[in-house]
Image 1 (cartoon, protein in one colour):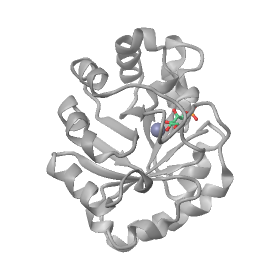
Image 2: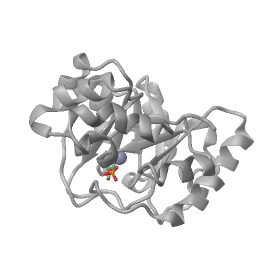
Image 3: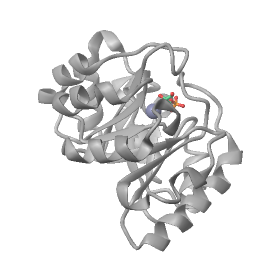
Image 4: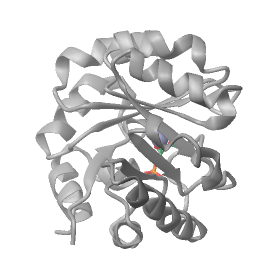
Length: 219
Ligand code: DX5
Ligand code: ZN
């Protein structure tokens, strides 16, 4: 089986020691750093903005996987790109012109991702596979960590895997929400390549990070 890319979600870290936490997961084997940006409007929670991303950048060398849960999203793409985002993922519902938004993300030098809420259909991206570098499937309703994995999303992951394979391109397929050592293999079997994990990585504190990440990679 393929080994997943593991992207710890810093939402589950100790925000009072954010720099240290990011360095610790990087040292523990994290592949990407997943950064959840929430505006209290698109989702019912508020987290952090571009200044914090910028402050973290010099402390971490793994790619920054920035998940924007803000609307309207377009006005903030440049700020996150300048702050050091490597991947910027947006929800189709966070702007009126997904195609324009994805093109802009690439123009800014970042990889462009599309995020699917549990109710969002794969058909949203049917006519713009060429503009996409990553697909992020939410297996929870966005806004909070620590929620239960929605098994209904596994069929969507499989459907998106077929759509990706039909392009012949290497588009990442990432899953976010309720990823644990139990649900990770299900995501991988459905065709995922990358897994976001908040609770499952940060539980137990820094001394547990390496074992937590290794367990998600399959032991
Ligand atoms: C929620 C975020 C997730 C969240 C996942 O809106 O997008 O990245 O941190 O947390 P866990 O892994 O605890 O479900
Ligand atoms: Zn996320």
